[in-house]
Image 1: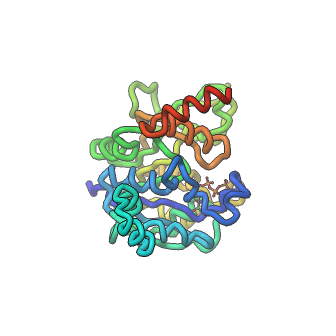
Image 2 (image 1 turned 90 degrees about the vertical axis):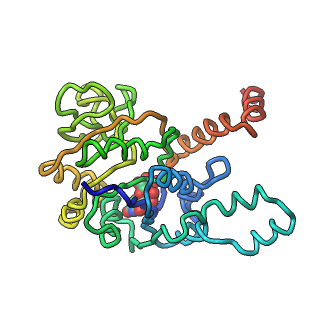
Length: 289
Ligand code: UTP
C-alpha cells in the first residue's frame, strides 16, 4: 500500500460568504488570532507527515505564495532590532521550502475541479485534500489521525464530526453501511443537506479527505452539479461504487472559518486558549457581556 505523501489544498475560491473582506484579500489569508488560515492547514499537514503540499491557487491569490517565501526586508529589520521571537514567527512558514507546489485553477468551477487541477502533481498515489477554511483544533492533528487510520484500512477516508440532529440540513451527511460502533466505519453513501428526519446519521463531512488517484478519472467525467460547480462529492459517489470508503470521526473540534460567524467564533475559541492573550480576552468578553 502506497503511503499518503501529498496534500491538495484548494485556495482558488472567491470566498463570497466573507465579502467584502475577500474582495482584495484571499479568504485563506484571513487571520485566526495571529496566523493566516492557510498556515493552520499547512502545519496540520506537515504534522501528519505529509511531504508535499500542493496549493491550487487562482487569480488574486498570489499573496498566499508570498506568505511561504522569505520577506528579506522585514526579516533584516527584525534581525537588526534583535526581535528574535518575531523573526522566528515570520520565518516559520519557510519550513515548506521545496515541499510546496502551486498549480492554478483558471476559474473557480468548483471544489472537484480544483482537486482535478492537481492531478499531474499528485500522479498515481493516494493523497489528502484539506480545505483551508475548516480549521480543526486537535492533537494529534485531524489529518495525522486520518493517516494513522489509513495505514490500517487503505481505501478512501472522509473526516466527519457530529452535529446536532436538527442541523443536518446544513451539512453533507454520511450514511454508515451498518450500525456504527466507534470512530471508524465503512460508508454506503453521502446525502447533501438532508432534513433531520431523513438524515442517515448526524455525522457531517468536515473538509479533510484521503482519496485514491482513481478519483481524477471520475472528476474528468463529472458534469457540473449543485450551484453549477464540479462537485468533489459527485466524483466520490462514483468512486464509492468501485472502492471502499470509510468515515472517520476525528477527536477534536472544527471551526468553519469560511463564514463570518464561524470565523468570529474560531478567533474567540483560539484566543481564549492562548497563554499570552486568554486572560485579557476573557476579561474583555466578560465586561462586554
Ligand atoms: P468553499 O466553497 O468554502 O470556498 O470551498 P469559496 O467558494 O471560496 O467560498 P464561498 O462559498 O464563495 O464563500 C472550500 C475551499 O475550496 C476552494 C476555496 O478557495 C476554499 O479554500 N475552492 C472552491 C477552489 O479552490 N476552487 C473552487 O472552484 C471552489
